[in-house]
Image (cartoon, rainbow, N blue to C red; front, side, top):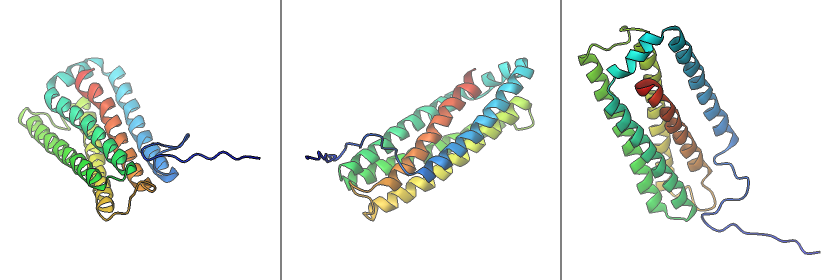
Length: 197
């Protein structure tokens, strides 16, 4: 009786492979549940106060929101390339991609800070009305997740620099990338909801 075996080549993933580990996914899904709850709160408030919520987005700095959207989408591409580089055993490339991811995250925070300053100059605060109260809560909550994500990616960068990850063992990096992708996905949902719709 012959038993066929296959060896995965670098850069390939085994069928059914889930990035990271179950604990990471439990954490990510719990974070997404929190965002989902406040998305529902936002939509209910919008139904109850349609005029207020139709005027709100036009008063925000849409350019800042768009810039941060493009920045986070690009950062997800950076971190995906970091994982790919690790699969192929390219440690220096991994380090560069992770540094770019962190730089994008920091730039996101800078733009968000400038946006908040712009809001203050235009008389927009948490007390302006219900729309802006929810805007600030959702946007600031997301900003906190970005800051946590920067710390997570920084840890993955340190681990990569120390040579902890290689082409056969990079589960920790996949977990960090999964968390970062979740942050990106939440912003992609937040941007049109807060700034456009």
